[in-house]
Amino acid sequence: MNENGQQQPEQELDAPSKLASALKHVSHPKLFVPPYVDAAIFKAARQHLDKPVKPRRFRPWMLWSALTAACALILCAVRLFTASGPSHYAREDLNHDGKVDILDSFALARELKSSKHLPAIYDVNGDGVVDERDVLLIATHAVQLNKDNGS
Amino acid sequence: MDAQAETNSNLDKRTDLQLIAAINSGDSEAFEALYLRYRDWVTALAFRFTQDNDLALDVLQETFLYFLKKFPGFVLTAQLKTFLYPVVKNLSIAVRRKTQRHQSTETELAVLEHAPAAETAPSDSGELTVVLASLPAEQREVLLLRFVDGLSLNEIADAMEIPLGTVKSRLHNALASLRADPRTKSFFEQ
Image (cartoon, rainbow over all chains, first blue to last red; front, side, top):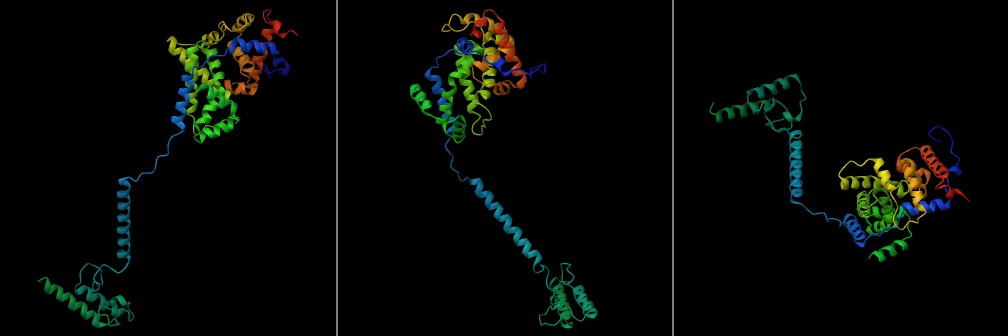
């Protein structure tokens, strides 16, 4: 199809061989390419393509990064296990207010009154039973602490 | 080295696709073989645009340095001439612009392309040159790409980024002009 939408017969697009030959003569002269031109291209190709593979070098910053990451991991693990494991509150600090005082004793006494079967964490004296003796121990501990603090 | 390199190129039976695959793998000798395969064509094409031997050699180098930077990762989707043609043309325009220090239009370049041919051309080609110069630039370009550079019609369409129908139309009109001109109609006579 031409620009006017008409089909171009293929034979009209052929050229006689002598025309093609003449066209090559006028438009395709054989030019001399000096060897230095070839050499420049070859050199550029070798430089661009034959690049040596750089060995992986250990860099100091990699070590520091690895150590820092390891320390961070260890710290996270420690916090995780210490936070979810046994309470960091004193065993007698039943109300978890950060101090062992008579309020803890009262708290256990109330629990004893309301329930007969209390969990083992309330077994402050470790005798296997949660009873008044645990309440007394806490109260004694609280008084002792107060004495130590000079109150 | 040139003779040896030429020999190596002649012995290299790999196709363009195979050479390009090797170049993508870092084989510089494959690039040398490809360069030698297309060197003369690129030089002649550059001379056609620049009409200057030194400028043609500059364009030759720039063309292949540009081509080299496409590796690794170059993918050949058509004949290599289809890829190289616009590169050579654009570099020729640029190098002439730099040399002449003024804006070089496509028209000027087309006229320069068909200045009187080199001394080695037969004398009866002088009239052909004149008639060629009188053709519209786009018709002349298609004619030469087809019968001098050996590109197919589809490849010409790809290289020039025009529709196939336009290629056919321009080629038809160019041949018709040559056939009708008394100075060149003898080429069409049996």
